[in-house]
Amino acid sequence: MSRLPKPFTFCVAIALASVVNMSPVQADDTQTISIMVGGISKFIYLPVKLADQLGYFKDEKLHFELLSQPSGVDAENELLAGAVQAVAGAYDHTIDLQSKGKEVQSIATFLQVPGEVEVVAKGSLMKSMADATGKTFGVTGLGSSTDFLTRYIALKSGVTSRQYSTLPVGADNSFIAAVAQHRIDAGMTTEPTVSRLLETGDASVLVDMRTVEGTKKALGGIYPFTGLYVDARWLARHKTQAAGLARAIARTMAYIHTHSAEDIADKMPKDYYGGNKALYVQALKATMSMYTPDGRMPAGGPENVLNVLSTINPAIKGKQIDLSRTYTNEFIVATKAP
Image (cartoon, rainbow, N blue to C red; front, side, top):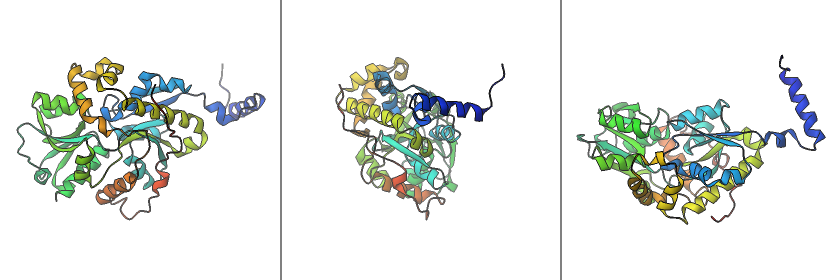
């Protein structure tokens, strides 16, 4: 049987919606929301998977699926292509994209600090980022947030991006392999990968942004990092779904701050432990402070992110960036974990 032309089916949808006293926008709210995560097993994205495990998305009557890409920049590209409706990714992408004329908006914030660590491979002579000249640095992807942050902390130490190389090596096992195979001298990654490398002795910490103190030292202030962002056009048409997503995340943040690392680990898929649950729990205990208490964007955070990006990105420096259009706390409501 041949398919009806799209204009005809669209008109039929409008007619049916009016019969049941629903607008086409409301009808769209029954569609599946595809959420792309820039590395779903990373601690920096833990809230979105934990919300799924706790059933909070289902409580909001959301039809959803979680997908994973090794790099946040890949997830961003999926959103811009219209392949997914939301991204669990780094907030700084919203600023970078606005400078390119594209509007995306964060509707919930997971981290008040990056949770990223610059590690140095065993045998490297690097003592600080001032020794970056001639070295190869691992990042999740070119144009990713790890790429942005690597460039900033190197430049802060007097080394420009022309003086070293960057290599996209992904995260988790692929990052560990790049270290073990000596393809990179240093690289930026997150938990639980950091703890796995430290335990084996294959790497050591050079710059630590898992805490507020370490982040302020490296980046000059707090740096809201990961969260849930959506295309502004989608948001305008699907506020009911957006509110449901934000409420689920807010409940998850409350759960994180009222439960132990052991409780949280017990809710996560076993294959996330990397074969060592005790190490997973230990790493989680050390990083609990990086999560926002309620999913709101921290005051002053967007301004510091813009300052960092403006320092390293000529496309942003001098541009008129409207930070109020890069995030919203509109859908975050005070909530308590059960």
